[in-house]
Image 1 (cartoon, rainbow, N blue to C red):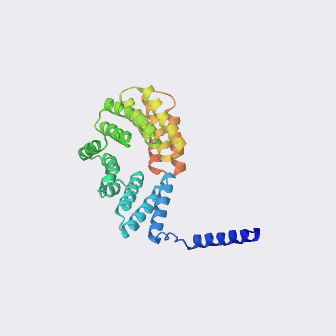
Image 2 (image 1 turned 90 degrees about the vertical axis):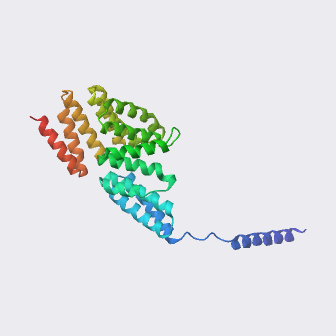
Image 3 (image 1 turned 135 degrees about the vertical axis):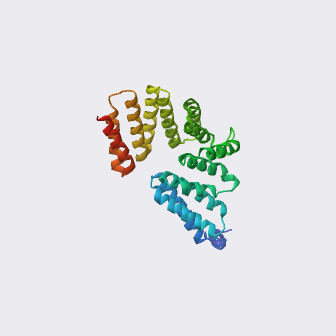
Length: 278
């Protein structure tokens, strides 16, 4: 084959290949409603991570509605659970309980029960919380990915029932499991619970160490409400142990709460400051 014919053949082959590529069927575009629902869920997750729980709840609610509109029940339930989590963070506990209780899909039952027990503990409905916690414990055995959070809920339930020693044992057992799952928010919650339980046991130094561990994590996560509560707890520990810095801890709590617009926590800090100024 002459060089000119070789080039001509190569050019024809390339053209044929291009034509073949051009004629291959393209995947159909994602339906508009699905794209909108996915965008809302992504936005909701981002807003939640940023601490904007109100916007997160609204985005998850709309995502759940859109998924329901094209009969994707699993995705709708997933978004409803995320909406409940945001509502719980907002203090809308009854709404969170209702939305989490609507989720019946088997793959989501552990997460749904986790939220339900948290809400019931906040609502001080101890008997029902214990019943659902028993169901959750049966579902989430040793190899369950949520085992650390389940043990932390067991610790919270023990604390609500006034069992400080059991609270300490369960919270300490939950800590390494939560660290393995990189659940930093829950690790901070475990330290905060440990601090309160240790204080109830009269172990002031251990309580202060636990509260400071929670504060270090919450600062890293930049969660104003938790930081303010950590400082309030540190102040309570120092006041109970007659340490001289309780007044300063309450002032730090007030400064954080004031800057974040957390009126309820500002009031709590003001009351504590008055009590330590007498």
